[in-house]
Length: 236
Image (cartoon, rainbow, N blue to C red; front, side):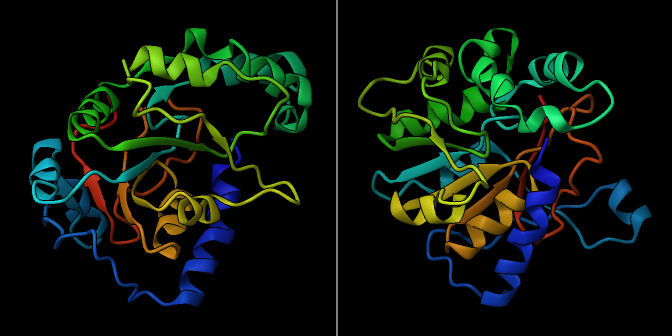
């Protein structure tokens, strides 16, 4: 997928704005540690559970929250694997093929697997009365069924659901950061460094979701690399 390359430009944007961005919606992160982190000589990861996250929102009124799609709320690897096999077995050129995106955005997620962490998060935000946005880096197509698919999978009432936003990197399209600002997103959940950096650049609270170990996004992003909170057990 294109998440790795998009991450580089987003991180650059974030760094130019400064690392001391004010985040009124974010509490002090919860510190954590793992043997892997110690062995790698990295800074401790700021782990947080869904329950702990919910407790930080207790006194806050309903807000707009955003989710990336691929690897964040669904494991869509089978669709991307099929696209690569069909259109460019030896390269990533299929990601530039409109036919692939037309197929993926219109029924290609019938074989995608919902992530349990997404079920928990979305149910929590629905209970709070939050407005839910899905902001994806997928290329836009004339028609799409993924909005309906996500609403059905995660049982999102119409009052909470918004159509999927396609924040393609093509010229003339708004970036994820621009969409977050336009929709007044206060929390954004994503897998990639691009997601985290885009949220920080928009003064949005970023929360990292872990990809499944068999994700097609390789190499996997380094959780906590940008000092963000990371949801425990979110690879499932």
